[in-house]
Image 1 (cartoon, helix red, strand yellow):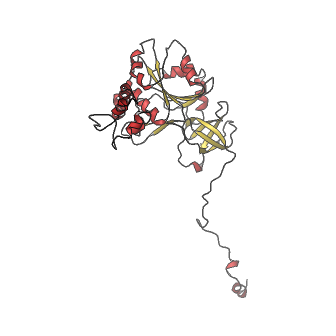
Image 2 (image 1 turned 90 degrees about the horizontal axis):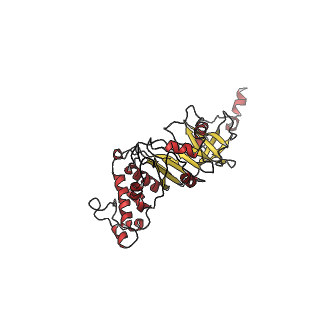
Image 3 (image 1 turned 120 degrees about the horizontal axis):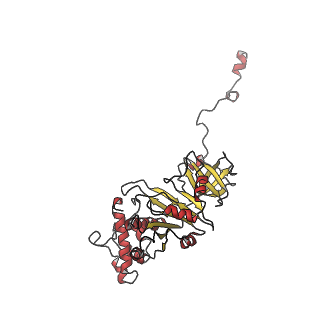
Length: 336
């Protein structure tokens, strides 16, 4: 090119390579109109096992899509998947959305731990499994599980095992004022009544190690051991007593087998969260002074919950039961 040709060039003749960041990033995210709905039934090392349309025969392995960010995804979550949803070995779909949760079972490691752990999402019931003997029942642990259920929107059910070793009458009387369904089982009989309550629902089972929870699961889901392996085979590990897993019930519905829990921290739950689960008492509690723990004197001398009993909105026994739960929340986990 001659010197004269250079003089005839202007900026329209020059190609400029755009630098990084010269093109604004779009905030639009893919709509994923073809996404398929599924329920999370297993989690292992960054991989989720999902049942398409809640069908236990249509299991798909998924990974979290980038647009999900750090969104929490746990057992029971309703999610949407795109990509390869065939479920064939060595295939992965992408988890692109999580639906709003209808209930959440949370706990903390202890009452001083600020980090709450979501154990199960969208369960309708929390079945608190407690042995009547060997090991002996711990009412403090039951109380804390009740608190977590009420605060998380789950309907609690108390399941007493090993009734062939001890009678259930005393423990049943303890919770008579809470309108709490109580089911009693024996190791030498099928848990028929419990199975009927779980049918066509999503239920979580929680309990100390040794109370017979695994025995119940094996009776409720005869193929539980094999199904656990299938659900948990998505990662490099396998299901152990440290992870929850959802198992399909023969008559429909799911039971979430949670690991044996040594303690149930409630650092994330306030007194008002508990009172809200008690109609009549909850309305009266709105008249209490700010910051009231609703435990009565001497802890909360200005609490007015006694007015609910005077006005016939609650019984004295129900108020005492509520305050026992509040005291359990205020106690230390080691006591239970």
